[in-house]
Image (cartoon, rainbow, N blue to C red; front, side, top):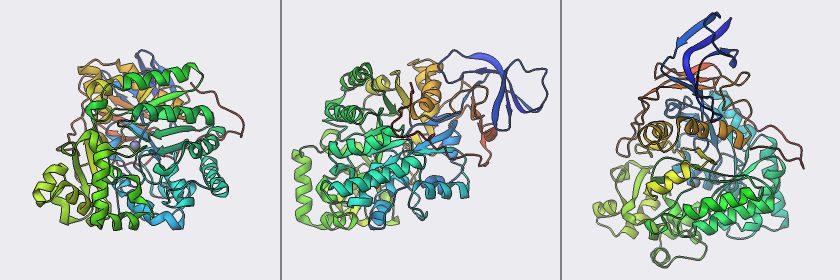
Amino acid sequence: MFDLVLSSGTVIDGSGAPGVRADVAVQGGRIVAMGDLKTQSARRRIDVSGLVVAPGFIDSHCHSELSLIARPTAESKARQGVTSEVLGNCGWSAYPLAAASRDTITQLSRPIFGSPEVSWAWSDLDGYYETLERGGIGVNVATLVGHGNVRAAVLGFDDRKPNAEELEQMRALVQNAMDQGALGISTGLSYPPGIYATTDELVALARVAGRNGGLYASHLRDQVDGLVDSVQEALDIGRMADLPVLISHHKTCGRRNHGKVKFTLPLLEQARQDGMRTYSDMYPYLAGSSTMTMLLPPWVFEGGLEGMLARLREPSARARIAHDWETGLPGWENRVAAVGWENVTVSHVATPKNRDVEGLSVVAGAAKRGKSVLNFFCDLLVEERGEVGQILVNSCEEDMLMVLTHPHSMVGSDGIDVGDHPHPRQYGTFPKVLGELVREKQAMTLEAAVHKMSGYTAQTFGLPEIGLVRQGYWADLTVFDPLTVKDLATYRDPRQYPRGIEWVMVGGVPSVAHGSATGDLNGRVLRRARVAPGTSRARG
Ligand SMILES: [Zn+2]
């Protein structure tokens, strides 16, 4: 007898293949049978006629490291149909942590990871996963190792190259993360301390990830005016270190750069023809979200948090920051110049004192305080000790669609679950693709969209036995109504759950039932299968 049968749904299996009418049986947390199961007995039978049965969605780009501890049901993701999250993106992971850099890492990552009340009582991936498992999680979790953590653990926030011994220490930290099940290494090359790394350093570290079967995911050095060169750098690293390359939130920033994905996507295609596996992830929104400190030039961060705060207080340093925004610096992403302050909104602050500027653009916030934009910006970062989140309108619809519909792209929310005004992608990414892009705009087929949310993502990261509705696979399943599925989260009112996601199962246990969260915590940590050094794994 089966534990559960989902009967009479249309199965879109995550492989990209056309949907078929089939019943799906679950037993012991796995999919055990598919087809016409009307005559078979089951403890529970759910009629899902008219609905699509898809693999549970895998969010390829997450920053939920601490919000998962604070809110383990991950309801904002579960209600979208997400059953697995890939953490450790953009150079930021929860680990490794060394004593010397712990304070700066934990403080600077607050606008990204959120949840200040969580203590970071671990130092490596095993320790972090133990913490997650102890509290329970409502989604499965996999992670990359963040280059920023690796560099900070050895070099702190110094703007210099590692010596041979330090590079060896960094390589050992990457190896340790891979041994403990990381999926690869990520960089955040416009954030400190990743911003101080040379290409050579990244090749040396990526090589360790690659020989263990991992990939290289890059939040590029310059996503703004230097986008094309930065994509080229990521591909060079992939070629020299011999591993797959994933361009994180592949997009254009600022009107003068719109259209540039017409150049960067063909670069990825060319690399594929040369034998490298190349990928992109993207969310279906034109605005991005991050920590506001990312707008600062790299010299401001030297010495870590206290160095940054001291400089932000000094009038001479403020003048130098303004000058750099005006004229730019070689090798630095000058986002302010390309995007404009009117397109930068304060999404989160730490203290009640500045709560009134949440949701305002920097221009409006400065006007409210009767300050110049420069002084408002610097004062705010000082008062909040750097804990300021931002939402920036970067891109254009045409570029976003071109990336998302590209055959080697995955859907990734890049969601940040922090504050009262988080980016709506934390609540709306997956239903927005299914409702707006597939049903309303017909930008891609439903099968292609589901593939980019499940099977293709599992294949890219090497996550076994998830991402497909297939016999023997984990019963991670999402059941939705293709005619009504829709995101409801907006920039003004972001904490709104979508509609049309009816059932979500994690290992056969519903995290969402009849469209409501159950509170069950049946998620598990997903470790990359260990690969012997020197062997490369065939993945598509
Ligand atoms: Zn990023």
